[in-house]
Length: 111
Ligand code: AMP
Ligand code: ZN
Image 1 (cartoon, rainbow, N blue to C red):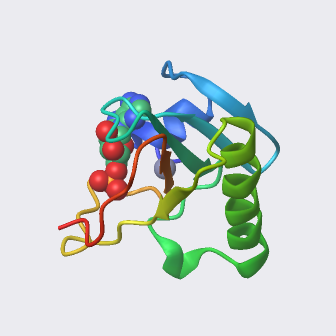
Image 2 (cartoon, protein in one colour; image 1 turned 135 degrees about the horizontal axis):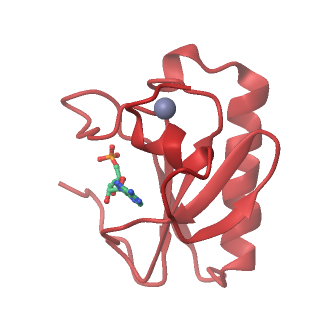
Image 3 (tube, rainbow, N blue to C red; image 1 turned 180 degrees about the horizontal axis):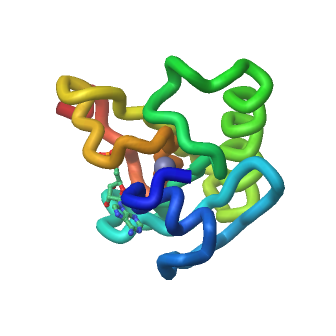
């Protein structure tokens, strides 16, 4: 765990979050600044800066969780899963996370 990493600290229960799901590999919680009626972050417990260091089984688990949570959170009409990466990708928190968003029509391209 990185002591200064906000998502490591949420994963460890040291910082508050509106957690909707937790297992031995990942935690999912509502985004503090939601961009859609449903905006949940799916976050591995282990610290990975981005996709580049995460192994395929973990990545598969995270994607599978997005699909399961989309169903659980009532996003039957559709949803979007986004992984912002690096400066050009608009990543602001340096701990891998998947944005699961829905509850409204998601425009494309996002800008
Ligand atoms: P990104 O720009 O892809 O790195 O996304 C980071 C996301 O984390 C943003 O949507 C923030 O609103 C969200 N965020 C930052 N800090 C927290 C926090 N403490 N709890 C919940 N969401 C957060
Ligand atoms: Zn971290």
